[in-house]
Structure formats: C-alpha cells, structure tokens
Length: 458
Image 1 (cartoon, rainbow, N blue to C red):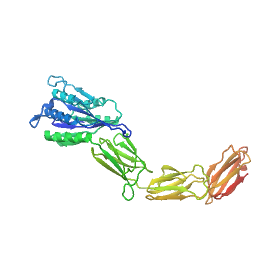
Image 2: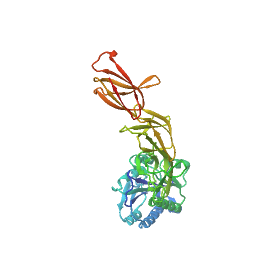
Image 3: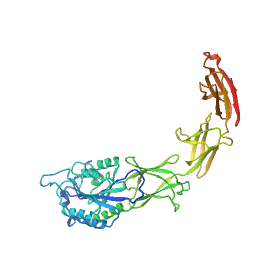
C-alpha cells in the first residue's frame, strides 16, 4: 500500500485477543498496552506545543486517572527512540517494550515517559507485529493495544497487511485513526486499518483518548432478539454462533435464552470485530457484517419465526426407528432428518417430506405456521412374512398405475423374512440360487392392509 508523505497524524488502535469460548464466571482482567511513537517527527508543533510534549503530558495524566480502576494492568512499548536519524543510525526495528505488564506500574510508565526523546523513524507495522509477544499467558484477560503516532509507515511495512495477518491468527486489529488536517487520499489509505477521527489540537486529542479509554473499560454487551412472525422477540432456546466476518473463525457460541425479566439475555462481546451471526434453527438463519458499538448495549434483531412439525399414525407403530427427510419446498437438498413421533421446530414456511417407510411416502408443501404444531398422519403399516423354498434372489415391488416400482431386496441368505410395509398392492419376484434358468423365476401378488399380518409362501 502506497502512503503519502508524512503529515500530522494521530493513530489510535485497538487490538483484542479473545479465546473462542464463553466468558468465565470470574471478573475479567483488562490489560492495556500503550504503543507510543517517539520518532523524530514528534518534535513537530501542534499548536504552541511539540506533539511529543502533548502526548507525554496527556498519557501521564491518564496514568493517574487509571490508578483507581479495578482489574486493570498497563504496559508501555515505544518505537523510534533508540536510533537517531540525525546521526545516520536509522533502524526499522527500533521498538522496545519499555514497561512490561505488572500490577500498579502506572508510576513506572510516567517515569519512562519523562525520559523519552524523539530521535528515530516510524516502523508502525513492525511494532504492531511485536506486540503479540507483550502479553503474558492469561485465561481470563482482555488484551488491548492503543497505538499513538504522528506519522505514517516509513519502513515499507504495511499496517493493513499486519492487521489482516493478526486477524487470521486470532488477533483483531480495529484501530481508530485520528488525523490532523488530512486530505482525502490520506484518509482513504487508512480505511483498511480502522475508523477515522479528525483532531485539530491537544484538547481534541485528549477528548478522543478519553473516548477510547471509556470504550476499553466499559462493557460492550449484545442482546440478540429472535423475532417471531409478529415482530416480537419471543423465539429462544436455540444455539447461535458468532463468526469473525473476515477470518470466519468461531468467536462465541451461546444458547439463546430469555432471562428472568422476560427479555433475551445479554452477553459481553468484543467490539473490535465485525461478526457473522448464525442462528442454528431449522433451517439456519443468519445475519452478516454486524458492527458492534463499543462501550454500549447493542441489540441485534434476527427474523426467526418458528412452528412445530410432528409425524405420527393413529394405530400401533411397528417401526423401531422411522425417519423423515425434511427439505425446503421445491429444493432437493435435505437439511434435516426428523425422528418419527417427535415434535421438532422449523422456521415458518412450506416443506417437502420424504418418510422412509416401505415404500417411501412423499408429502409436498407442508406448511409450518408460527407457534402452531402441524401434524402429519401416515397410514398404519402391515406385516409381510415371506417364506422361500430355498435361498435365492427375491425382490419386492409395489404395483401402482399398472407399473412395478422396486422397493426392497430380501437377504440372499434367508428362507424367511418379515418386512413392515405400508398398505397397498405388492408383487414379490423370486428365483432360487440353485437355478440357472430365467424361466424358473416365480412371482406372487399380495396385499398389505393396516394392522394386518400377511404370509407369502413359495
């Protein structure tokens, strides 16, 4: 990515590392890593003050205000401060974790800030890459990076590419870009990295910094409203999965519920990502590219109206494990297999059923309505017990409209077999395995009635 010549820019970014599991019951620790630009350009004036002076003063003040925050640790990484461009020692690896994470180290950061003098270049991409090593292992931590710089990349690195690579590895970079007097071309160059804000002076920088800290420290919550056919959030008790819209990795997996107040329950969520939400109804419904507003309560509405389907028979069920294939009306793909005599929820609409009896029963355009149980009844089956004189080849056909339709082959190793069949007219065709003559083929017609056992003997 080609970036224009260096101009006054403040670039504030957020990176969050979040494991793919539900939030732990204990209170989560927040760890904030400040990455500060100390390159030579920070000597430039911002109003009546040098930019470095403004950044050091406001960050020091911020350390004082953060001391009272619970479950918070901070650290400081600096770049562009170890090698002097003026002395001909420009280094694109000039970055260092000056103050590691620890409890109550705010004064250490203030002390280090007071020592900094801008001298070097601006390796933004390389510094971002190094931050992944700054966070010690932690099972219940929210890791945040705030990057402050007055300049664009000077070391041929690509912050956009780094951002994408971090996402692919489960690290999310969603920066806030705060610029000063930027033209449209420069603004466009940062769109792949994050959200843009304009600042004109030290006061506006302080305001934006407070906004970012507020978003870091305040919980971001999400309420998913599963809407019924009447536009009310009554649907619930279904699994829902949040995917990273970019990497497609699973981020969260919850079972939706209505809380004790009678509304969909709230969950905390990382606002640094865009999400694709899949609600595992039958069939699934989804919503893509969901943006979460940091530090606020977000409500996501998804149309998920549902009704029920039950398949049953009036008499005795002879089947031990009868299944039904469910397809959207007019489609060939089976999206669910329902057990017989069970009630299952589906998104409202029309469905085609294929019940795995012998022969199979096809029922098309079965309508599922909101909060209604649609019952589909099938005829009670009968039993056909077939006796063969010798082991051989035997097939059963159903007779329909003066034609034969194959439905079943008997085992070649049996002399007797009992089969559950739907009511109708059938024909069995048989030839002994000992026979090598086609003309010795035998056949018999038989009829099956509901609840009746029929014997067929050769």
